[in-house]
Image (cartoon, rainbow, N blue to C red):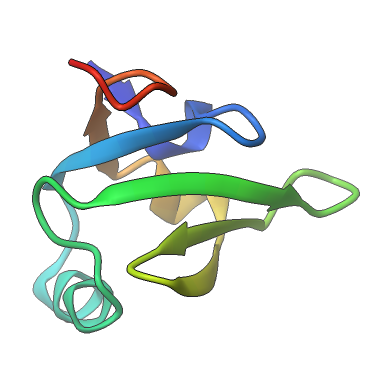
Length: 80
């Protein structure tokens, strides 16, 4: 099991599960964080927290504490 915070810069994967409270889960869902959606880490801040991800053609910055609650699967080539 891998979490979003472990995704390397320019690496892609797929969202499998979001393990957080309903308020944050609903907000992430509205931003495109849905099951089987491709996500790519595109930018690190100087301290690597927060990090920017592209999902559904939108760039979203997430704190590592929130990214740790998102389970991902698949490699940078998009294969499982």
